[in-house]
Length: 198
Image (tube, rainbow, N blue to C red; front, side):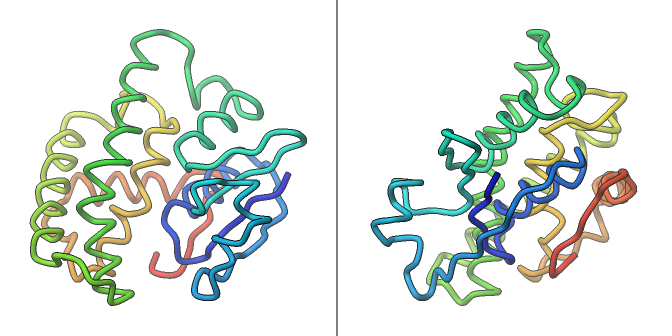
């Protein structure tokens, strides 16, 4: 198994984190995005979107971090990481969508602008990020984990990186006490690995 990776990408990190949590190894192939390696023809045969991460596992070529989490959970992990019942799958799908939309456009974009100097609407991204953090904090005031009350699953892994990295965007996480406690719970999981900024 090979993971096409970028160390500072939160989307790549969520895949590395999940691999650590389930004790699964993958060869990491770091791409130099500044040199345009993600847009080269050979990489575009792996991920036509020209984005990271991408996973190669035998004949499977798979892009998108949320899709990779689902695949790894079904193929290599205990069922608790991606339960088969309809209620759990519905809840998890909602959080995966939240990670790809609200978190991407809030904390993710705010971090991209602040840390990497990308030309974005920084004030707008910061406002979205604060709304996302408030929503998560309120949810986690009532639940230990995002999609299930008693244990983590891939929903938590998908949401965690850009939320935990909000400090890179100049956002103070201190007011979000329930969110902070959830981050501590994730960091205490067996197999947890960190990344720069965490």
